[in-house]
Image (cartoon, rainbow, N blue to C red; front, side, top):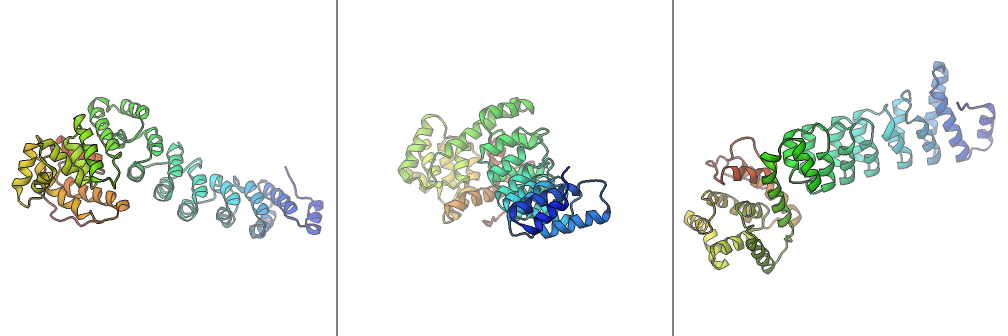
Length: 379
């Protein structure tokens, strides 16, 4: 075991280069682990640590951190100072140190860049509180690393939050789906969001293949299909897109609902005109007729479930209200408002995302209960 000798001290006093100071830091940190140190000797070593964490050369601090990273007796202020340092100093402490508290780690996740967050996500044990901070503040790669880590505690609430925030990331969704002891309600949400191979594993392992997979896989396919249509698509592009859907028999009530809830009002108008075999201008006049007869007549002519007229009555004004919101914000804001306006009128638990809303509407054949929430203010 390294021991700081008189020769080391003499050399350090004579030639205090960063290299020599780094060697001394390593030796003192290694000595600090010895169980036979007297309280006076340990206090002296810790005083030297407090001098070294202020050294201008990061090599000295990095050498100290490398030796102290797995030392459970290091003073908390020293461990935290090293964890807040530059990356080459901080990462070993963030990844290993048991002296750092959950409060320390949460603060560092919130205030430090991705390399710091990644080191924390890779710790042997990550508490629920730290996992939630990473879900709130971490990048796709960091959150993917967190959910892949078997030592990370991911509560149901954090799992749902990760799905809400990273549903567009196949990397994160696949890693989350492969976690052990995944609650069934999260597994059901994930079926539409993961890759094909993971989807099959997920459905089989949670016993939801027969009950859910056909519906959720179809809804996932619809979501992926609609995502092919650019947000800023021209009227001609939309018409061509809807024509292709109609040929495949894919202009379904759920697809029309998805178009509505993601702000693609022109696509809804085009879809209904195609289903009815009337010019789009005529369809627009019926759709936006202030009375209920216009919507009822076009719903019936299109061969849609009777309940669709009420869904259109509620959702079309909502979609129009969000037309002026910038595209980058429109989709999330409109989806949230649609879930609030429509989901409150479905039986059972409130839907948490668009897939659950559409599945709930389908189960009820798109019939909505009497409106309980008269006004929805966009967030």
